[in-house]
Image: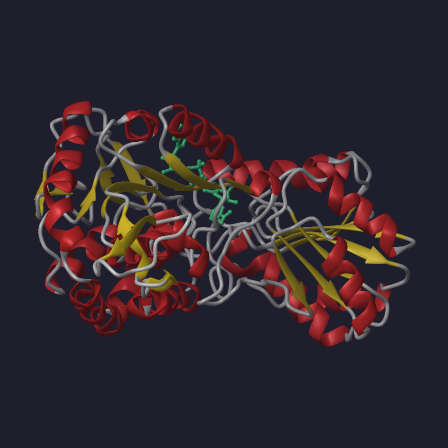
Length: 485
Ligand code: NAD
């Protein structure tokens, strides 16, 4: 085993869990055992929450300009430790070096945004009648939880942690049990940056720990990123327990390709979107709606896909179970009568035979009833459905229960605008295959891709991580008396 058993982190210390029945942490790159991760006990969860609660008052009362200093240092530490973090992400998640490095770079951008919070949450004051002032101030909500998925071991924890902490909250992080290593370095770097003990805590585990977080009386807010099935459970459990919750779920992102699209730009974008991070992005292209005759573009997509080689410019999928699930979808599509134009099944990387790879896969003549058309595959697979009109394509996209992202490829502003207006998704790309909004804009889908009122990052996260205090003040006796005061 390359690393020691994963520890929990609370009161500023790494603590060994007393639990038994650890899960193995396996590198998808080569199948080697990296570590084991404990399924922490209810007592340990209580200790982590107590640690966050004890730190909440002094951290929450610290002026925001003081809190933010820690994050200027943390941002620089991310940069200084970029290579080490990149290697760790690649090892535990299976991404290529460049993809893992992008995750570190994005974590830096997220932290930079958090560092701008003092400018964004400057409070408001207005003289509402003669001598009478109303002021509105942002207060932290208190102890908050963040539950993360496997596909971005560092970036998703940095979607929530810097904003929540700069805004004065203390946090319990629950990483995915498949990739628990990167957040350990995150905690170490925060400590090095001078974060007071107890402000950031980590509790490892699975379903039981998540349910414990959703039920804990001292936790005020729960943020979740993962599959729709679990997002619904987390949203239901935490709101049932009267907590605020934002829960981001899965996705089935549709790309509309119109006949006037620029062929090479479209082909490279579609291929990069469906295969980047081995298709394990909630923003990945999963279905392509070919409107009219776009055969030359489909030919170019296949040519681009054939340039992608597992183990070189394509990383691994997270586990053997994921590889089997993805290959199962491709086989099912073939049985259902679709045509496999590029087939990624059975990929093996020489020297890394224990790794779990699926090659890029392009499936044509998919019909809207097939499982590859409706379900999230979460692998490097694109399902092409052919339609005669944009409205037929929109009907297919609108009927899908998810709504994370959609994109349109065309050179016509009017047609792009039509798709932008009518696609039922929270994040739209025009000639962009992975339309992730960059800070200060916020990230979040629609429909079954997000539950809760706010997005998870950017400016829209501010109301989620804060509550407003409204104070009305009158000092001078000669101040106006009217119907309000
Ligand atoms: P997952 O739902 O299996 O796990 C997410 C978290 O929930 C993990 O920490 C896990 O331990 C916990 N969990 C798992 N089963 C649980 C249960 N029954 N009860 C309570 N907690 C449980 O998701 P994953 O496989 O780690 O991640 C992939 C999924 O995440 C995909 O569906 C992907 O689309 C989605 N995702 C969405 C976004 C977004 O922004 N919408 C971003 C990243 C990933």
